[in-house]
Figure 1: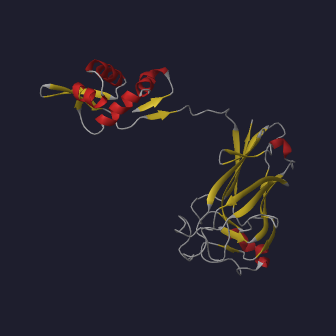
Figure 2: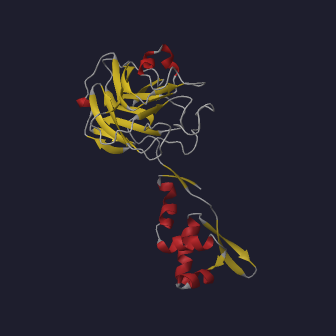
Figure 3: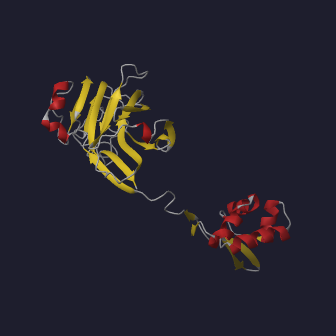
Length: 296
């Protein structure tokens, strides 16, 4: 059954708003029963049981069939889907930018560190000098033990556009030589020089292969991360929809041309477990780093 949040389906919601009627549905999901049989299971009179069945029938959740000399009740639907209104927030325009994880514009990293492309490692592993190699643009996975990577993303908003919200989406994990599924790391996220906060990655995962990780990557090294969404609003910052930090849009300094995004493992971090950033062709998600600017 497909329903919506409207008066048209009020009978359905009323029918479900009863412990007795929920019990009736559970009983009928196993077998067809008569009013008298249901009444015996429920410890109620046949008259009261019939009233409950009438409400379920009116909502088209059950129906009655004649089996021999008995009138039995039967479940009519196997699930009820509720479609909520699609627009629950003010409709904003969105400008979306996606950059390869190797397109960082500034860095300071220490081993273990490296980059990987679709067919092999890019440059030599654990040699930070290769982080300036032009082939870094081809990287689908970048990792470092401590330090930071910075990305510059364009700001194409006009002076007449009003920024309402920023989403930063990234697939992240810790960094351990080979891998360690229990290896926490505090990864700090900053925008335009303002720290939003840090997220503690639980590990450097290789329990199963990444959905998009190339076949050449060994099974015992980084395979995938966790996709995290950092949302900056005018009343604070949220991580995956939950309140995370007090930083708001008003706390950010704005460059008319760009936004600067930084992922960092600080020397002062409690858990210094490194950072791995996954992009296209690696991990469990198709996307690379994304920034979405919501504006009106």
